[in-house]
Length: 249
Image (cartoon, rainbow, N blue to C red):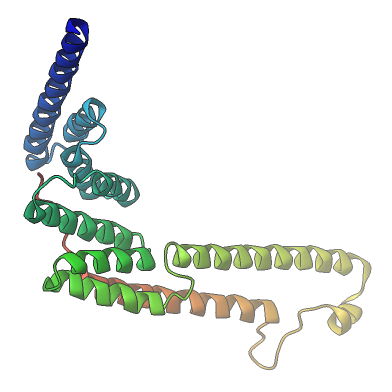
């Protein structure tokens, strides 16, 4: 019985010591974060998580630290971790405050990655907690609008589209190069009259623009249009861009 009691006391002391180390690391990280020493803050918050993997403050503040450095994907992961470990035993007021901030930042990190469906869902959860928050409302509406423009659900859809376009352009260029090589071989075996009759591409009218050149011009125009559209979207995002809830706990 004494051995069991002693073991329980030792475990209790160990837990209390771990919690104290966790809070100490978090406070140190907060001071470093306030001074924009993000690398040092990163180490402190991770130490806090190593001491207590369920530490909400360590995970949430580490998310803020990563967000400030532009690492939105990793920031989102730690916001999710913080959300999973908010204790049910906390007061409703504190639990709601932490839940709202965390959901808001999950949505913000998703928005920065153009993951519009995930952003919309996170802001919706934040609004369940605080239906009157105007920033959350604006960001929810913005995410929903962007999702309508990205039927694939956002979440990298634009990146995939760009990748597909680049692959198509690269394939077109390879085909063009192959055609040019074939034409050069024909030049060596045919006289000029035969070449004018059979070789493709032929000059078109007075402009003298070949189909390949016309295709390249079309691709350049489309690329310019996309660049203009991206610029417009960025300007819209700058107006409605969510402001991260980065007050550390």
